Image (cartoon, rainbow, N blue to C red; front, side, top):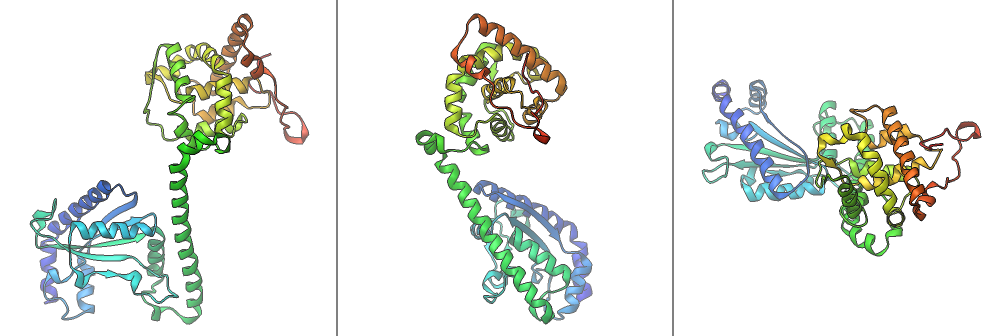
Length: 393
C-alpha cells in the first residue's frame, strides 16, 4: 500500500504544488486585509522521499493521501508571540478547521518548558472557500509561530532533539535556562511593541501640550513634518522657489535623518525646534532662495522640494555659523550625494551663505544676528579645537 500511495502522490505532485502557491497567496491576502504586520509566510510541499519515510515509520496509519494532513503546509512567522493568537483567529474565521488533527502546542507543555509553542491547524477546503474553491476536497496544514519560537524549533530540530526523552540529562538544564531566556525575550519584545504603539498614540497631544518634554526622534519628526511650524515654513520655501512641496514623497528614512541632523546642530526637543523655526523663519526663506538655485541638478528631477526642507535649511544655517561642525558629515546625514559630490555640495552651501550674509547686511534681521553668533567650539582629539566647518570667513 505504501508504494501505491507514494506513486499516487508523485503523479499528482503538480496539483499539490499549485495548492501550495494558492494557499500562500490566500493566507497573505487574509493577513493583509486584517492589517497584521507579519515577518513572513512560506509554503512547502512534502518531498516524495519524506512521505515514503513517514509511511514506513507509521505502518497502517494512512490508508489514502487525504489521511496525510501535512502534504502541503503554510508557515506563518509572526514578530510577536501575541500575534500568534491573532493569526489563529483569522485562520479559524476563513477556513473549515479539522479540529481532530489540529494542535495548539502551547497548551501541551509542562510549566518548565518553553519548547516549540506554535499552533498547527489542518484545514479542509470546500467549494465555498474563497480563492481556493478549485481545490475543494483537499486540505493543508497551517503552522503559526513567533520568530523566537521558530528559532527554538529550528535549532532543536537541527540538534536532533524531537522530544524531551531524546535530550541527555546533562543537556536538559541548559535547555531549560535557554527556554526561560527566550520566553522572557518574547515578553519583552511584546512590551516594547506596546510602548512604541502607546508613544505614537500620545505623541500629538504631548507635542501640543508639552513640546519641551518631547524628544526629537524619527516618530516625532514624522509627526512634525505635517504640522506647524514645519509644514507652513516648508510651503513658504516651496512658494519662494515657485516649485511644489512634494507631500507624500516616499522616503521612510527622511524623518530619522532629519532628527539626527537636528541633534547634530544642538536641537533636541520639539519645543526647541518650534522656537528656533519661529525666530528664524525669514532667514530660512532667504537662505533657501540663495541655495536651491545652485543645486538644481540635485533636486529638479524630483519636481519639487521634499517635506522638511525648512528643517534642512535651518540646520545648514546653524552649521555655517559653527566652526566645529563637519560639513561632509552633514551631507552624509542628509543623503544629498548623487548628482553632485560632497565637496561640490559644501562649496554650494558656502557660496549661498555668503550671498545670504550680503543680503542680510542690506536688510538685517534679529534672527540672522542670533544665528551667526558662534557657539563654544567643540574640542577635537587632544583637546585642540575641532576643524572649521561650514563657516565662511
